[in-house]
Image 1 (cartoon, rainbow, N blue to C red):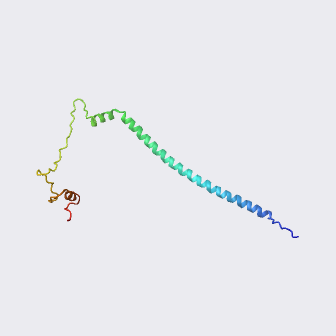
Image 2: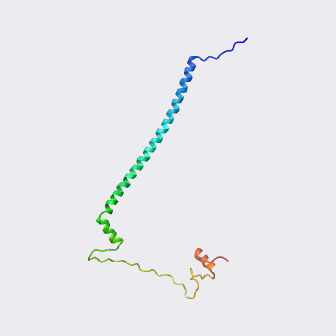
Amino acid sequence: MKKKRVLQFPFTQFVAIVVITVCLFLVIDFGRRTAANYQIKAEETRLETELADSQSQHTALEARLTYVQSDAYVEEIARTQLKWAREGETVVVVMATPQAKPQAPADGQPAAINGVVPESPWQAWWLLFFGMLPPI
């Protein structure tokens, strides 16, 4: 009969395999923690920027609130939007002069563009868009 051989690992090989496995686990864990730390730092930077923006907006809104509650704001609104005046003052409203509008010919024909009078409505549209009569 043949004897079965049992493979035997020396103790040093077993210890080396365990140490390598533990080291590999530690390296992978360190990589994960480094990536998580990077993401946390990026989020912290983004939140600090958002906080600074919110604080500046808050300061601007507080300044606006103080101005809106002042007498200067009330007077500005009364003068600009409501056209009010104090006693003894006269409100002057400047009216713009109307622009001259082009007059259509009295005979019912379409107006000439660039000295050319279109014969049909589609030619008038063509003349309006392209500035010349359509090629025929």
